[in-house]
Length: 455
Picture 1 (cartoon, one colour):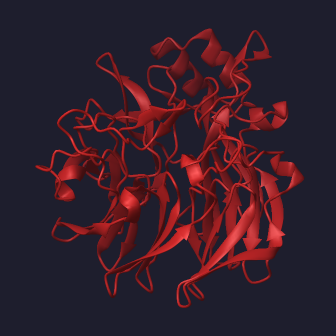
Picture 2 (cartoon, one colour):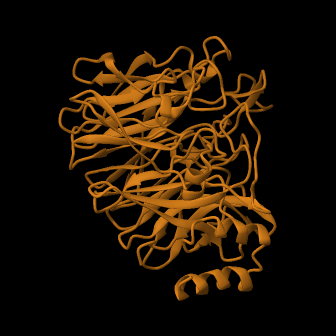
Picture 3 (cartoon, rainbow, N blue to C red):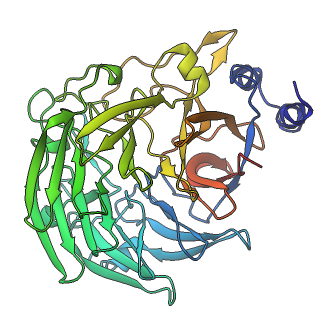
């Protein structure tokens, strides 16, 4: 054991009273150092689980949205400045959308990353308040007393120079925006709504919003075993031609041509691979054959993606229409155990670093007690954790194929970040996410900073 590892291990064990359970999990992480993360409380004590909604901008700052569950309290936009080490409140989503006095269900969250073009950030909103119908979280059909139903997600902009927000328009059919990406060169926004799953094309040049119809059966508003389909959470644009790609629960890859407004299912390639596992596309509780997250890799002119439940990294060539398995990029303990991670949808904290060569991935790692892996539930109804696990930071250098598990991540008191589904990197290589932690006796989900793993 080298001196650096020993120092960090003692820091976690002695200063924070790290439990035997944490130490055993650390020991199982193949002698990698523990990463000590810093928590930031942004001042919103109702902050709930956030998916995506975290990005670095060209000004060097980290922008993020904290989600809210109550029907009458909106999500909040914040910014973190790595130089001053301070967070700042920027805006209330309902107010930004012009709905402050309308007494409708709040714009509770954003579910998408920020896209930047010509000095502005572009993002969208989603509902954070749901109604349980037939055992599933649904968009409310019965509004709370004194309130109207959710109006639908908004497309928004934020001017980095003057700090002004812009409301660009509503998603169709009163649905929230689940998935979004942007062709920043051609100024086109593409999105999938929730719960039914309409594909939306928003032309920023003309201001026109186009509804291209449902992407997969009746989406997550469907009946399980019939027309239910889990919806894709990650879309990418091929910058060479502006074509847009997304996946379906059946494993199909769909290409949208914005110029012709045509959807095409690629007939000679799909995601129904044995390595990913076997899924019933009409069932809930996993992403099915969907890719979980996908990013464009300019140096090879291909997309790299991760399949959520299995944790396999693959590359997709849109021109050659081929899929190639690259590696399994789950944590080392997960790779050794051969088991899926506890979060059945897989993780959204997946992105290409500033060097445009290294993939960063925040994923799970099993916890061991008395030398045995702690097992969670076999099946759950919705995408959530089946049991507790460690958070691991993985990097994968594409040109050399170097995979590194940088070890488990703990807070300074020895507790674990949980419900992690976002990632961003600053110019110094520090890694950010939004994760659960306890603040003054209350569980919140807020900004977390993980030190550069290569320093």
